[in-house]
Every structure is written in structure tokens, then in C-alpha cells.
Image (cartoon, rainbow, N blue to C red; front, top):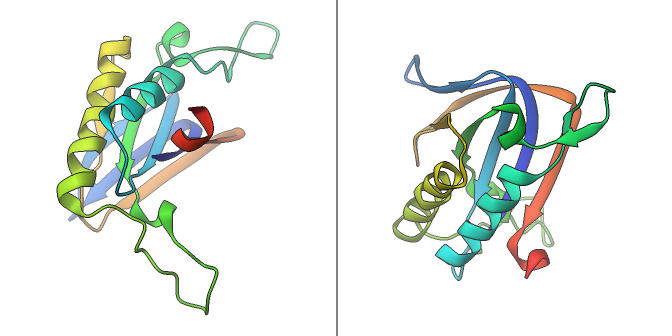
Amino acid sequence: MRIVLQRVRRGSVTVAERITGAVDLGFVALVGVTHDDTQAQAELLARKTANLRVFEDDQGKMNLSALETGAGILVVSQFTLHADTRKGRRPSFIHAAPPEIASPLVDYYAERLRVEGIQRVEMGVFGAMMLVEILNDGPVTILLDSAALE
């Protein structure tokens, strides 16, 4: 699994002109799943997401986690995180998991965020054409890759 975490002041997903998920201070988590990803990896990444200290403390230092700040997390499926751009000009998405694998793992990651103690977990709509609004704060953008954490 690959997750791009963007610390945001505001993030939202709109599908068919209707907002399906939104957060204020927190993360937008863009989640890409590959064929051999597991629930154990989703659990590991949810724990890392909830506890990653990238929110500012009283002195303006990145020293607090989403759990400590009460930050919300907007989870958005993003198969393009597994794009293979080594050949030609058109990316290949052969490494992205099919919907029957990816969708349940994205949902499981979101559920594990709740188990970790994140009070507000919002979702995009798997497989839909989404308009994702991200007001990146910092900017702070962190890449989490389960292959690098194991």
C-alpha cells in the first residue's frame, strides 16, 4: 500500500456535485493498493498515520499527531499511486489492485483509523470520478509505503 498524506487546513471530495466527505484541520490520505497488499499492512499504515507527529505544537514545531490534535482524516482511493512510468508516455496501471481487492482494503484502512482513535474519518467514493479539494498546510506531504515499513 502507498499512502500520500497531505496535512490540510481543509479537504473535501465532491462526486456528482455533492460533497461526500470533508475535513478541516487534518489529513487527506490518498491511498493506493497493489495486488499483494494485506490487512496487516493497512493496520500498520493506519497506526503510522494516526501517530505521525507532523502537526505543530505551541512552539510551531511539528511535534503532535493527528490523535493528539483531534485532526480528521479524509481517505481517498487513488490507484494512480501505483503508476508505472518507466516506458513510453502513457502510464501503466498494471500494479494497481483491481476493485475487488482495493476497495475492501481502503475501507479497512479507514476502519483501522477509527480503531486507532481518530474521531472523524471521512471517505471519498471508490471508483467514482471525484473532485478532490486539498488546501495543503505547510506544505506538508508525506509518503507512506508499506514495503518500506516492513
